[in-house]
Image 1 (cartoon, rainbow, N blue to C red):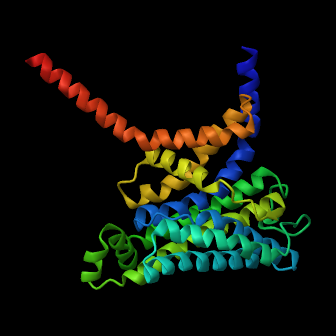
Image 2: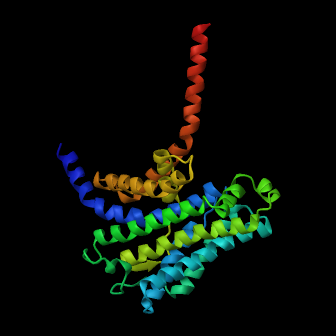
Image 3: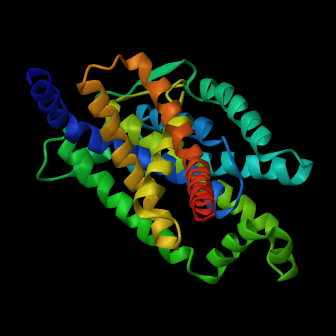
Length: 309
């Protein structure tokens, strides 16, 4: 009883912090979802674009630029990184995963060049979280309000875009590139633009994380891809993916639920090194669940058939 009470108390105390963090990392999950679901373009660039955005934002803040300008630069660099992955795939016929690995690997050196060191502190720099008038700067409430507003704006803009003619063209490329090209859709433009957009969102997440935690590090994206995939699987299981708005809502809903589950595990006393193992096992379970359900359904049907006989 004492264990349950202690776990619940610790979990409740962590909710504001994990909620703010999950909203920030929801943009990485969106950066994973857009190529994967909208373009049928499995991509690993997010793991490199996330620290890229953080490093660019950190250097910009240290140079005295405004937090909005710093985020804008991070978005631009992330967009370029995503475009490079798509271009490598299209121009050289390299598999999407390998193209993403190549860009992700090269971005590590790029990030080191940008910062000139492995990590950079930006404590004391003005951030967008300092602009909330009714919340104390740096506290979770300010972060939840700011990132929540940005998340809502991004969701509405993406929902609008993917229901327009150009957005429908992007989805058509993901559904059937040959048919889309036959209909006069520029497959190259749709693919490069879509993957670039995803890279921009991952970099946006990195920039917001740096402004939230007060430092940038070249290794800050380590493991972010598997966490984002787990969050995406949870979000799709909760809200579905049959309509555009559901598919766009899934990354943010999944990120919130996933990081609350991580918080619950930590509150229950799970050692932090075991979280990666638990995350990998959970993703494997979510991916295998449809197959397991299908096998169970076939076995039940076979049992009913044999009973009738």
